[in-house]
Structure formats: C-alpha cells, structure tokens
Image (cartoon, rainbow, N blue to C red; front, side):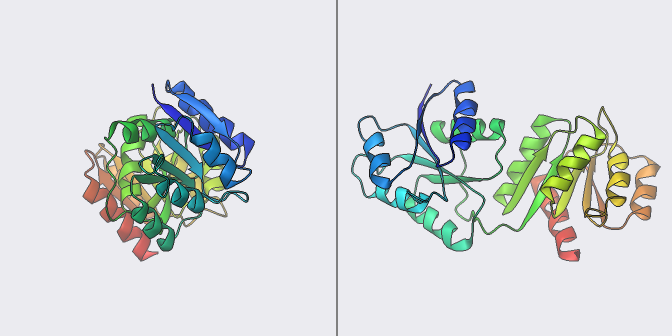
Length: 259
C-alpha cells in the first residue's frame, strides 16, 4: 500500500481518482488546490509516495505545482502523475525536463489509472524518452478482452496516440460510446461474444458522424468473409493476431496518412 495525494480543483474528479486508487489498495488523501501555498503546506508534513495532479487548475496550475515541488528539498524527488486533456509539444518538453514525471490523457479509465500508478510506484513504468503530448490522433479500442485493450492502448500511447478503450457490452451502447468519443480511427476486434465486428462496422457506416471512420479489424480468423468485408468497405484494414506493436502502429499510421 502506498500513500497517494490527489490534487484537482474539481471535487468530482478528485473523488473519481481517489476511489480508483483506494480500490487498488492505496491510502489516498484529497487536496483542494485553492492556492499553491495550501497544496505545498498539505504535502510537506508527510510527503506522499505519489502525487496525482490535474493540469488546468485556476488557483494552482499543474505546471506551477510541479516546478515548485522540484525546487523544494522535501518534494524534489516526488513522483508526479499528471492528468490532462490539454497537451502539446511545449508541455511535453517541460514534463521531460522535470524528471520523475509521467502523464495520462483524459478521460482516464479507473483501471488504467490504478495500473499506471502501481507501475510508477514500483519502478516498472517505462517512460519513453521520446514520449510527447503532441497527440497524433485519438484511437478507439473496442475489444472484449481487457488484456487486449490494455496492450493495444499502451502501444498507441507510447507512439503519440490517445487511446479510448471501450468495452463492447452491446452493439448500440458501443456505437453510442464511439459517437461520444469521436475518434480519428477505430481499432476493432472481429470476433466478440455480444456482437461481431462487422455488425459494428455496418452500424458505423450508417452513422452520420462516423460513416467514414477508418477501421483496423483485429482478428485471428482467416475466413473469406474478411476479404469480402474489406472490399465492400473503404478505409478498412485487417490485422491478424498475434499482434506485434510495430504492425499495429504501422496499420494505424497508414490509415491516418491515407485520410
């Protein structure tokens, strides 16, 4: 069990993050960032093992908080996990220069937040020296396997894409989630218990906002219907399992470039 401090000006967001981390077995305290001094005052008596912080906070901007921690002898080695939906190259370079700092792009799934925190705390989190918040695109990941969603999301994130993992509980719910996320590309499993990938693809082509969404179908199935499906639908590529990271990113980049 680790000690984690959550700093966010939104009470709901603090509660969400705290709940996810407590469920993973950590001791969590929430800090309302009314001003930088108050946050530092709360951190000083017992520095946490990890600080989870929002970026855009009116009373205490995330960048200012990170810089203040790095300049403070008591907090300079603090591990900091930044949550943000507002990344750019300049921010990425700033975070790299601060050291011992990582980020997750919002919206963040509870399981992903807990997993990233655990790996960061144990030193198992691989922070690529070239990681950047200059997002190359938003990719929805629809797969009934949580392991596959996590693996594909990690590959995408490391290569500058923002993944949006979606658990396919039912066809219309998945379609609604995609319409809400508005991704630039869809990474879609073909054989799933509740519906097949081709059913979702047909639904997408009938959706006004997603009719031209590029799709990478991921499957271990080599049936002839895949060739028919690919021929009948524009901007659809097939990626066969087992999926290698370089093949996945190659397909995604090829479809993004074609668009």
